[in-house]
Structures are given as C-alpha cells and as structure tokens.
Image (cartoon, rainbow, N blue to C red; front, side):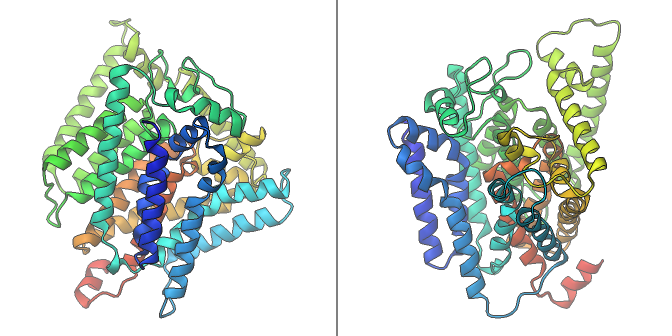
Length: 464
C-alpha cells in the first residue's frame, strides 16, 4: 500500500515532463505539487522495499525539470524581456552567492560551498523558470485546484494518523532512510526525530510531508490557495463543497501539526485576507477574539489561577518564552546576530542553516533572514528581506487593478508571503523544497504579470 507514494512521485514526474514536452512549461507545477510534496515519504518507502538504487536518480528529478523549463523558456523568448526591480535584486543576490561559492571564503571546502550554494540559491533559478513564462498561457486555476486536491488528501492521511495515533513515518522507514543517507540517528519519544513531538508529550503529525514543520508551512500555502481560488474579483468567497472540504482539511492540518509559528501565521493569513477583501464581519470577529484571548492570557498569568498543565502549560510557556523550543530560538538568534556584528560580510557558505548543521559547524540559525546574514553578510540579507517585502507591496497594489486569474495569482502571492513571514523568523523555510519551489516559481510568474503591457486605465490604477 505504501508503494503508492513513490508511484505518485514517478507518475507526477512523467506527467510534468509530458506537459513540458508539449510546450506547457507551467506543467512543472504538477510534479512540484504531487511529487516534491511527498518526496521524503516516497524515498524511505523505496529504500525499505529494496529499491535504494533508484533513489539517486529520483533525487534529481526536480532540479532536472527546473533547469529544463528555464532553458526552454529562454529559447522560446521572441523579444528581449523587460526586467523588474525584483529581477535585478535577485540577479545581484544570486551573484553574491556564486561569488561566495567560487572564492575561498570561509572554512568550508569548495565542494561543501557548492552544496551550500544550491541550498541558498537554487530557488532563484526556480524563480526565473517561472519569471520567463508567458502568464497569458498559464491556467493558474488548474494548479490552484491541484493544491486543493493535495490539501484534502493530506487531511485524509492525517485523519488516519490521528485515529490510529501513529505517525505515517513510523511505517515508511523514515528513520532508517535518514540514518543511512544523512547519518541522522532516530531521536525523540517516537524513534523518528524530535520535530515529531511537542512539549507535554503531544504528537505532531506530518501527513505525507517531510516533517510536521513542513506540513504546517504547506498548510499556509494551502489556505492561501483556497482563499485565492474561491474569491471573485468582487471579493466574494464562494462556499462550495470542495472549498469547505479544503478549509476543513487545512484546519485539521494546522492543528495537528502543532507548530506555534505556523498556527499564528494561519490566522494572520485569514485576518489579512479579511482586511484586503473588506470582510468587516471577519475583521471584527478577529478583534473580539484577540481581546478575549488577551483577557484569558492575563487570567492564566494572574495569581488567581495556578493551573499549568496540558495545552495551557504549552500556551503559557510559549508566551513567556520559558519552554525549551522558545529558549532555543532565542539562543540561536543571539548567536547569529553576534556573528553578523563581528563579521558583517559573512562567515561563508555552509556556516549556518541546514548545510551548516549537516557539516557540524552551524552558527546561529532558526531564522531564514539571519541564516543568510551569517553566511553571506548583511548586504545579501537586506536584499533578500527587501525583495520579500516588495512582493507584499506589489501584491497589495496589484489587487486594485488585476482581474480574473491574474487577481487570483496576486492574492495568492500576497497571502503566501504574509503567511510564511512568521515561520521565516523561527526556521529555515527555504530548506523545504516543496514550499520554496512553489513560492518562488509562482512569485516569478507574478512578476511576469506585473510586467505585462497595460492599457491607460490599468496604468492609472497601478500608479494610484
């Protein structure tokens, strides 16, 4: 039964390759959505079922497709593309990273620097693969519907995990695969990794994603896609059976992934959505809930209540930063900031983040922006941050004049960037291939929409 995951992975690759061959280059999203999302479920299943020799070629499917689409897009250009400010900034960011990889900067060897370069920069290649597409030829609703199908499927798998109180990863060979390929020994109460459990002994479920953290981040992408897909140009949300099922699945996922930052971001996405679409009832409900929440927290911390057990203890320890996870974040942030102050030009690629942890020489971390700063310095860090906030800025502007599928894409990018902001402060979001590839490919497509020639009325709205 578990062999269905590597089968889906392979079939998604073949389907994407077929679409690309037919000239529908956005078809790469089929593989990113249905293949990359369950990559770390498919690979362990193959490993434990006597197919380890297939893993090395399967691992490079996503890079092969991205490079293929980028090259084909370049050759398909009929005119010299007009570049946006975001394009120039990302060119500069990529050049900085390449320079840090080529020059002997830092303590890492050349090979390790190249591995770190892929981790810190390949998503820029993904961006330009989407950037050079003609947005008029992309049926964005189709790919949003695929994300919604994936969301419902993840909810179904999660429901089974919760009902049986067993992680899917306990049956796929996740621990054995991680130890064999990455020398990561099983840890935590469930012999997987500590990310699968939370304070108080509560299980955190990942469905078919790599881990609960990626599951939670994928849910932020999902709720953004649901809201974008079913919101009309007049900002009315269409309640249909599929949209309600998808919303329910996303709520189930964000609850049982039990990750604090994505949970807060999930509600932030809905709040920002209500603001930009002018749903006053939702905004007022959020304000009322916030006031009630603050009063309840004040009550919990008052002398009149000394009950600190279960989920209440998790909540209180999160707020006062007394739980180990929060303390760990603070320590990593302080270490990273001190490193940036001491070495504002960076310590070199591979000195922080996932690659640094693998090499056993990690400095700071647990913050996407600080991880960049530690490795390649404050200039690259601020460029990345500026690009991030430019997407939010242009997302807000674009909602004023974009219509139809362009409006859907604009709302998706805005909500996605808002949603991933909080998790970026507590984790290395770009280390998740599914989240990173989806986010940057669609971001590139969005900039192509921004650069599409407009009529006079549209230009006036843009400049307003």
